[in-house]
Image (cartoon, rainbow, N blue to C red; front, side):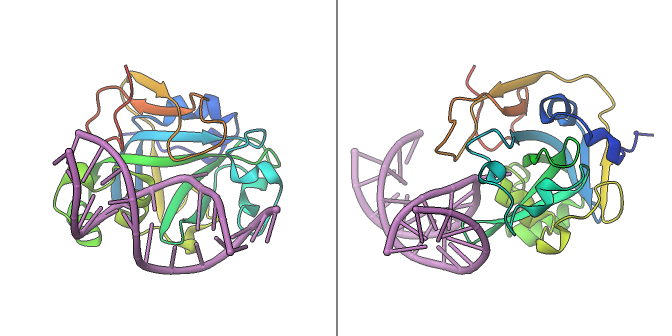
Length: 189
DNA sequence: TATGAGATCAACT
DNA sequence: GTTGATCTCATAC
């Protein structure tokens, strides 16, 4: 049986947590799969929502670790983050892509496409496929509807610059599962 | 394969 | 009024 990740798993720096999340399994209401791509954001990072201080939108980033931070992206998409580090550090990990494994038919229905490689290959797609909404903002990651399982075998990790940002574009804070065809964009060798 | 527009909203200038 | 931690579809090469 896989090991359930508890809240205190997130009570560390995003850069300690991130590599351990690659290969872990994320389910929401029984739907999801293996995490293959994430990005980290930190309060000292100009690209982070929390960089400019606490606002109504990013408030949960300033609270305890081990909860979800959900925000509306481009007015269209819901994007899911995991809040890390002790309270007040305002850092989080953006879930960018999954390899679908559970509830695939529900994801196909929500996404309107049958292609497994296209179900969760981007933060907005993950949000839609897993039914993420604002209602999940601030909710604990170790209680329903969330379920997070540690990876059961070692994985090879690749890193690179983050995607879709205009500040701090060179920081290599994008993490991926090496060779996975389910990432949002290929990692440069 | 690559580039561009439109969708749509909260935060910020 | 402008800008995004984006995606899809259309049109062009």
